[in-house]
Image 1: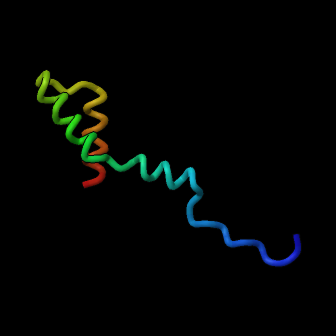
Image 2: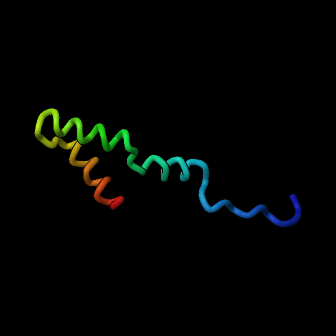
Length: 57
């Protein structure tokens, strides 16, 4: 109750999980390549995944 407060962490647990979830995994990359190759077209979901990959590059 009295004394110094504990330092606030740089990120909360939820923020850490959210940041980890933003990274595209190898599995997601392989899935994307497979779905595009399967039908030869890029749908909205694939387009958004490609945009995420482009941001990470």
